[in-house]
Image 1 (cartoon, helix red, strand yellow):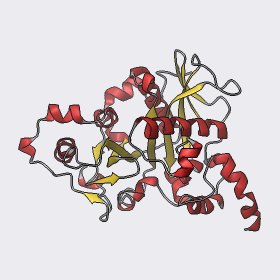
Image 2 (tube, rainbow, N blue to C red; image 1 turned 135 degrees about the vertical axis):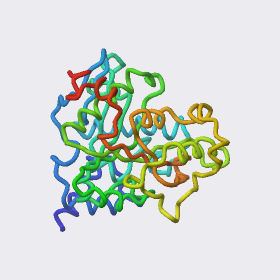
Image 3 (cartoon, rainbow, N blue to C red; image 1 turned 45 degrees about the vertical axis):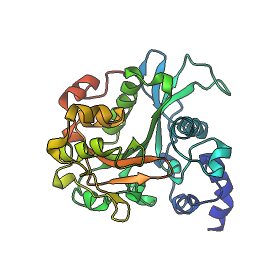
Image 4 (cartoon, rainbow, N blue to C red; image 1 turned 30 degrees about the vertical axis):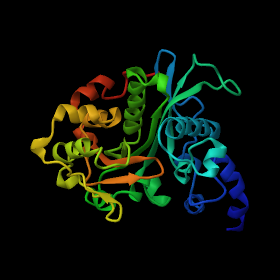
Length: 312
């Protein structure tokens, strides 16, 4: 235990984690069993796909994770409505304890101006957490907002993957970048034999009245069937049934949805029961549940059953 305590400053530096605050206790728990093979230490050129100057790959160094955290700060805090605490504002990086145990999917642009040591710019990222890693290190991030334990327990033979912290730099929010991110996720799903993807997806804003149309649409038209349903935590739950079904204009509702949520729905995802307001990020979150078996066949054909569409 003393050896672990002495090593904590190195751990904090490596993972870019703050040395104080609410995030430290989960890191202390995680450090006892964290192994490089279970986190984001991958081969230096673990490329999952290429599309022109863009490459999708997994982070292989602590510097890669820090660049992903900087991108998240740029999008969540500078562009959108997240409110940084003092440590976050000083570091100018979006950091939490889960970064230490997740894999980090990156889209990098080899034609963009290079930063320190010639590293290509990170223009898109996703955070990936496999079930067996989560179970060894305190659980999924999503469990802070939704009751996912019963959902997982109902499917004991299936492997779950949590998707989170998705963002893309504004000039790269186009089909090419999003397609590469999803190619990377699909490659990862196949590599690790994932059966179900889950995660929180956000609508900008915290005023339920202003979000009544998209939330009600998701409730009436995209609710997960009972075997795949999970409820928002009772103490944080926001009712999504804010409008009667017959009063909803589906086209207007779809226009009001963020592109990420529309993308999940097109893939075949369903939505959990109830939403959660995240005051820090200025968002209202819904639960995404996407069994691999439910993915629209045309998307599997598009990326290839063996993820060869954009293979490097």
